Image 1 (cartoon, one colour):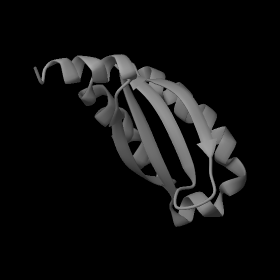
Image 2 (cartoon, one colour; image 1 turned 90 degrees about the vertical axis):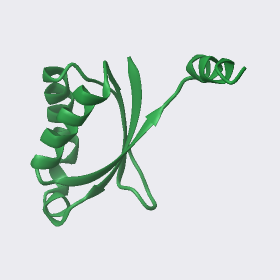
Image 3 (tube, helix red, strand yellow; image 1 turned 180 degrees about the horizontal axis):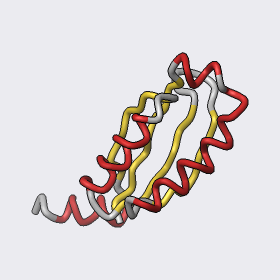
Length: 97
């Protein structure tokens, strides 16, 4: 499974309904399962991003489809980072020769 870190900023709609943000987290966790994606952690943050989410997905296409559905809800804009574990990074470095 690939690891993805999703940086989230609330839209105006998301801010107006901020009291529902943890309920939306539960709904996103359930929605992710429909795409074969597993929600690992949600962190509400101070600073440049409102929430940081961590997901596992079988491939980029599954994650992209999930993120399209996530975005269509209209509560947040996302920036997604593909992350690599130490083991995965060692495999990448081994290919350097």
